[in-house]
Image 1 (cartoon, rainbow, N blue to C red):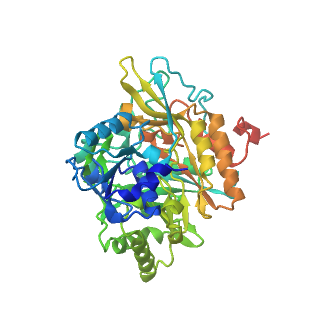
Image 2: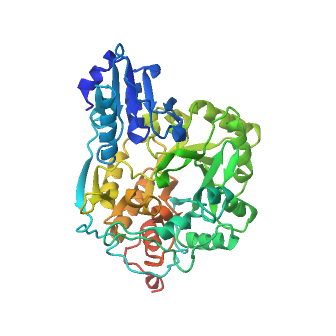
Image 3: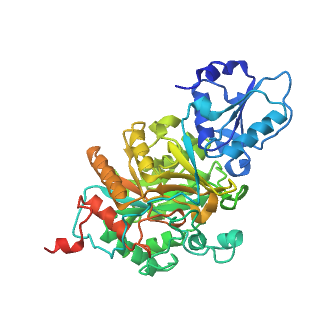
Length: 506
């Protein structure tokens, strides 16, 4: 049930301002569109307008807090969740009131979103995160097989590039943030350190990639979905992909995930400073497919129904989406690639919610943690936020299981290896791994495998192979060794959680 009072009243407004271009803003725009509200009647404001530009074909513009015209009736919808952006939401409400807007609602009421937040003291908060983890040596599961093919998302930002050195300081890689992380509360597992068997690797070194591949193969990983950073012809972080391409003996299958979101300095609280972005020029789709051809022709490139897979990260950011997809398909045939399989991610919206399921060959849940039903915030003795947004892994898992009904028939399921971006955001981090245990992870992995088998899915996806600055990684770490990836393999092959490699030899 939506807020019928507001919905039935929309026609009386001359214009509608949607403040906020995040998840809630997107859902607000979709609801307005479904209600037949004309596009020209809606303005989308966001302080990160330089970063976002376009949202569902709406222009995102700079907020203009000027006194509204007396002869025009305007509705303001503040599209910030009060439980997550509580102070920002209150500040915006006061700002609109101060310049003369008197018809203001929060999107939570408009959308009837029911999310609760529990405020806790950081000094007394205790979490049982990782309580049943113990250090484990590597177990080789190479002798087992699975008809379902696990694909782990792979981040290539573990080597230096000139752009990152310019923007973040000389020598910046993903390890820079990972190393400097500090715990936000007693028992908080930060910082994370890689296991000695992999170390703080450099992905411009072919031997580092070979080590990764060896571990992946021992644990049943079919391949990697490698992030591909392509910005209107400019490519960054491309070195590891090219190393794989150039070394045919590296035995890993892969496909490319076009990460089309803009890069900004949001990690340090500055979302307005855009570092690099896609311009979505008319000829970009042609050049994009041309650039991908050499990878797609690699015999290790992953196919779906004999079609090479191209995954798109954020389709809601793409203006003229239908035109782009058509140009991709036409160009692929024109240059000899043939038909392609385009899969999208449900980072925020499903294809059904956007009304574009007819365009694509599949959709995959990327990291489905961001619409959790209940959150926790930690405060210090002066009521300052110590950790901004947290939830229990079990709550997220249950919510995800309930959400899969709103999927297309060709959707693919996803497993998340915990999530904690404290290395990037510090006290403003999102932490979705409270209460994370081997048992919870094992049970969730079994569920993903079983539902994939039940629905005849060829693949499922894992977030992630090496997202160290988001504490989402299968790779071994110094504290628990190979415990997590061993647990994953046991679930994949339907082995008991307490299985060890000695049992195999009996």
